[in-house]
Image 1: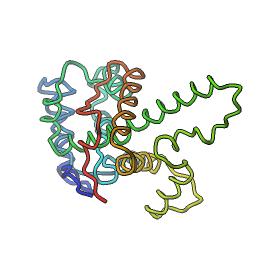
Image 2: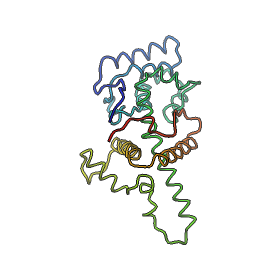
Image 3: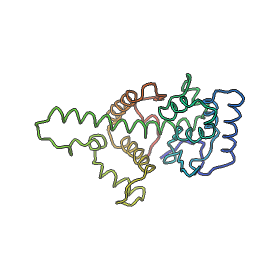
Amino acid sequence: MAKRESQLKNVASAGDSEAIRHLKQAIAAGKPWHLALLEAIGLWTCTEESHNGHSYCYLLDGEAFDWLLLAERLCQEIADVVPEEEMLDLLFYGRLPGELSDDEFRALIGSGKYHAHLNYLYGVTVERFVRLAIEEEIHKECHGYVFSGRDGGFWDSYQRLYGASQETLLQRFREERGYPLLDGLNLDQLEEFTYWLFKYRLKNCDKEKVASDTRKGVERLRRHSPGRSLTVISENPSHVIDHGT
């Protein structure tokens, strides 16, 4: 797979201390906190770290950047100077205070991180809502055929969306990543599985169906989180991520 440079490294560096210092100094100098935060994200270099007893993995699978997780980490440094309601809006709903265009957002965090953010947006956030949208379709269909005797196995959302059962896909994922076949997945691995499913769908499903299903996920996400800062440059995610065979 061809991976875009995300400007993140797998070890912490002095640059991350500089990012935190810049964040605090910029706010003290009067810059709006959310702009200072995005600038600090642009300066950040490490992909994962442990802080205050919590583990943070900002770059999933080497290519999908969870900028809101990094924002959560950085907000700990400025919690005493940021309006609580604005911070909660960001961390729980993905909403930044004020207007900010996609181009401005990209300029503040950097082009590499922006593209990696799109990978995460499509591959994790939207993908979850794609499955939810398909599950809702199945529920409506089954409700309409309440006396038909259809069982849920054939109408499984994984089968419809990815062309295989959840059990089969999970086994393939575990084998590919070298995870034990019988153990459960932790939260980080569940995110990794969701991203793996996204790439599996791009590679194995009809392009028109991929675009249609992704559009359903985007629409479902917008209904779930009205006003969310959601950047979607295309309803065909194959334009976002490069993947090879």
